[in-house]
Image (cartoon, rainbow, N blue to C red; front, side, top):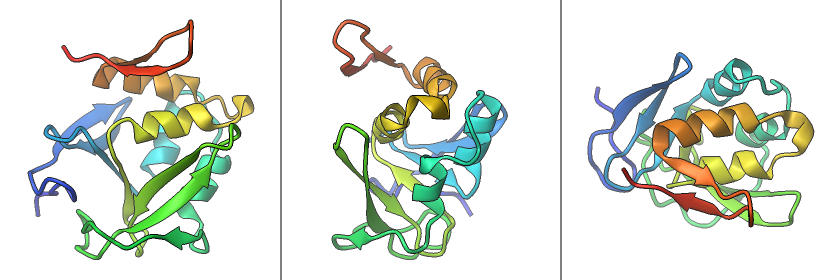
Length: 150
């Protein structure tokens, strides 16, 4: 079965980041990460395996908010919106499969989530890989995220 974007209903393209396969929507630029792919991405880029990001994604007790709006690309169940508050107190809302099949990140949400993690998590390697492959970069002067289209 071909994975379909939960937002656009178009076929997702399989991208490979350091031997981790991630589904990408060419229309809305969202990303689908199957169960365990965040851990693999962090591990293969020098990050920690047991960190707040993994707890956020895997915790079945995580507070779900809002109405489910999109279907899981793997099981067709309604995705549930969950919230993570970063160290800067900024809220990031992400859609997660209720069965645990994976997580949907709208454009730049994974990048923003990785940037919001504590320095000791060492997510900078994963950020660099995403930036290189997806064309995102962070301006050093004001730390604002910008998207570069090539």
